[in-house]
Image (cartoon, rainbow, N blue to C red; front, side):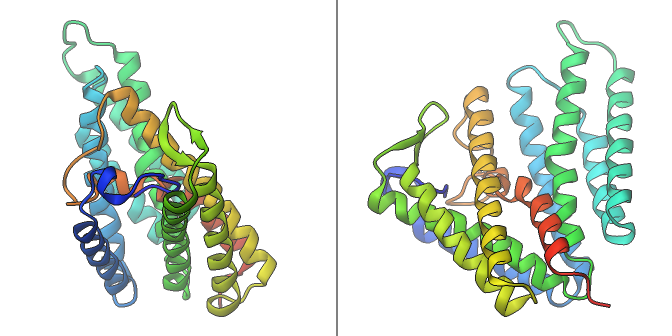
Amino acid sequence: MSAGAVSSPGRAGRNLPVAIAVGLSLGALIVGTLYTVRAAFVGVVVAAIGVGVWELVQGLRRVGAHPPLVPLLTGTVIMSALAYTDGAEALVVGLLLTVLAAVGWRLAEPRQPGADRLRDVAATAFVAVYLPFLAGFCVLLAVPADGPRRVTAFITTVVCSDVGGYAAGVLFGEHPMAPSVSPKKTWEGLAGSALACALAGMAFLTLVLPGTWWQGVLYGLAVVACATIGDLGESMIKRDIGIKDMGSVLPGHGGLMDRLDSLLPTAPVAWLLLTAFVPWPH
């Protein structure tokens, strides 16, 4: 479900009841681990990103790029673990080690006819940054004592961007925003996303976290900007690859990458703003 879709669920080709059921199940898994054993929540993040890495690598192989899967999956575990135990600086170190290991792995493989190692190295760096590195900021959000509330504020506000944009797009959408990338996205849908996120941010930063209303509005608008860019970015990748969905692991949704597209680029901005607006409790 993308923000600003102008079509109805039937025309969008999605089974809406199934999509809702799957979404609620994923939400229950996230909340259940986040508010009980946070290390288990990190495990959920690692599993989701691992599947996303696999989906993206398979997609890139369709256009001739071959980033090595094993070091990228290993790096996913390492980056998340380092972020959880040692913070943002360790996450950056984990990214560098992952890219170096993946590049070394690729260079050590026998060269296949027609292979382009420079393209493979670029694709490897892209996957490492796009998935495990950006997801590491979601792990960082979970670290402080009030981490579960921070993660909830992050994920729920992104969901509000999708829901608000979808509703406004279906009801009022007439003016396409990026027809060459995502024809169903409309400016009216974006306005709905912005309104929903501003209200959600204001609620979270006044009722759930000790912030102010204007900080919540600013946070919500930053979320909708990043979520929209992430959604359009993944749509552009899929269009270039020539596929509709990154996978089929989630009935009614497509692949995990189709659910992570808005979350990934929003995670570092959410972490930055929530860290600035709401100091860590001692």
